[in-house]
Length: 409
Image 1 (cartoon, rainbow, N blue to C red):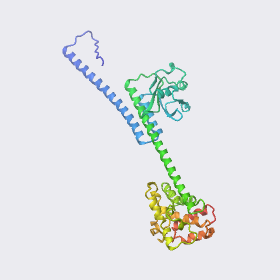
Image 2: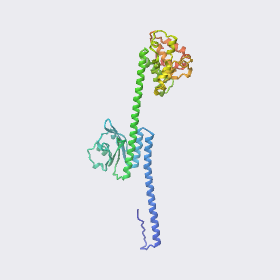
Image 3: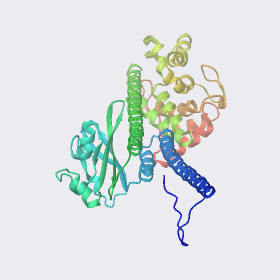
Image 4: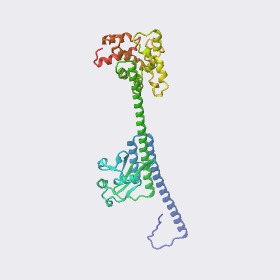
């Protein structure tokens, strides 16, 4: 622990028993004070290490942004380990390449251009061999490593590369470097490996999230492709003009945006517009394709198709929010529509929007029983039916959009 030394300047003297006892008591107190001070410093140092781990844990738990997590991790690594520089390389299993993803303390930007194959360079060896690589004196190490010139230019002396392993898979490598010799103890090395473990967990979490998002996107695309296929099949069966469902869907989305519907709502508007007549799949061909006028009994069957749409789509969870258009686009502003006789704003906004677009597209197309209407006649019809068939506000915005596009109305 140490020695308590007393020096006299007035010649040799003999200490009494009482003086020796006092000195022994002072020495014991000094020992206790030194021990307490060391314990305090050790406790404070350990608390800093625990806080560093806590900070990285919070970054991992609070964000799936690897840049943010790595930024926090590298700050803590360089500060708590007392190293001049640190870097994280990520492993791409498809190219079998390690690429620098984040770094601290490097004087040049050359690091960002260095790519390492598995087994190449010190970091590549750490990943391939799944063990920590320690170079205590870089100037004396082999010079054939592809990393040697960069590390020499940086003036590094001490180098560590720790593999990032999560669930048995290599995620990357953590490098720490210092520009003077380092003689770490076992606790220092353990802390370094603990930090590497946290970085590996963060990397694995983000990889899992990316995979989940890709799978989700692929599933959505598959769903939407199926819906578009249904829409084309309905157009063909009902002998609609080519592209009817696509046209009314695109215009419905534009009108919905102009009326302030949110982007997350437009996903369901699009699906509902594409499937607006899905209920006609339940109407017999003898009625749906009848060339002449329908009898009252046949009209009663035809008017059931919105209810058929509801029965078909409501059990499908991802289409439930898209039901407004297939179920309600034949409702009228004045309450005389079907199937439920909804009135005014009882009718969902998406259905009110689609009703205007659908009628406009139908009137502008040639049909076996009539030619397409002239733009002036269609405009007059929409204005005439505003407040009866259509929501007046929707008609107003729709006509304004067409005017702004320079279309003749």
